[in-house]
Image (cartoon, rainbow, N blue to C red):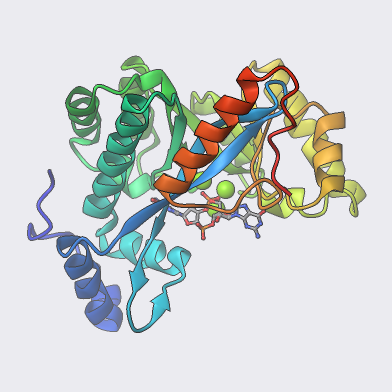
Length: 284
Ligand code: C2E
Ligand code: MG
Ligand code: MG
Ligand code: MG
């Protein structure tokens, strides 16, 4: 495991402005203060939850929940995302193995930042986690965003190496970067995730609806899976159903919840599905 005490490449400006917070991140990791929550993904064709997305949380006794995008942002700029991201991957895969041991097959997606992917030894670390946990790599997807990588060739090589082990990749927040199509053309991925900024307005904005429809078509013609994020209303669900978006994620189905709550949800669903007149598994 990457040592958190190992000297990281601090950027001076960030260091001066936020070194207290950066140090706190290191302490938090050492003291096991981070945790993961999991948001279910609903598969429309199967009419049930088939997977989850792992999301990082830092619950703090006095300050309450820290906004995770701020934490990730600081972690990325300071380099702390490398050890924190490794902790996320190891914890998520251990959890999948625990669910598996309890009779539940659950696909998982894990967010990884470009900084993490580009760190030397990323592929070797993934190979190690796969070996230690024994999780089937085809059940694990790494979500990447289309932020510019400093070295696209190295990025491509790393993704190739990890995909060769059987892991999958998805483009998260697809369509929000200025370079989406070029990125899609050069990076091999298995899934496109429609950003919630599009989903939110799919029934109220003609341009947003058109963008979603074309992302779904694009995914189809490239034989990629497509996931819509941030589905909150029945109208949005209906829109996605009509346009044949296969997998949906959002508060309409469930907020991110604990590993134990996922286990209960999936176990109940499994029982329902073995009964002939199982009600739809979607939670409203
Ligand atoms: P993301 O990967 O695009 O994750 C989806 C975000 O949307 C999550 O926010 C989730 O809680 C939220 N969300 C899901 N459904 C709905 C909905 O119906 N409505 C609304 N309004 N929001 C919804 P969260 O957990 O705050 O995470 C924010 C971002 O932080 C993530 O966006 C991801 O980019 C990053 N992140 C989270 N965990 C990790 C991690 O372990 N590693 C890395 N590198 N990034 C992470
Ligand atoms: Mg994501
Ligand atoms: Mg997203
Ligand atoms: Mg995002």
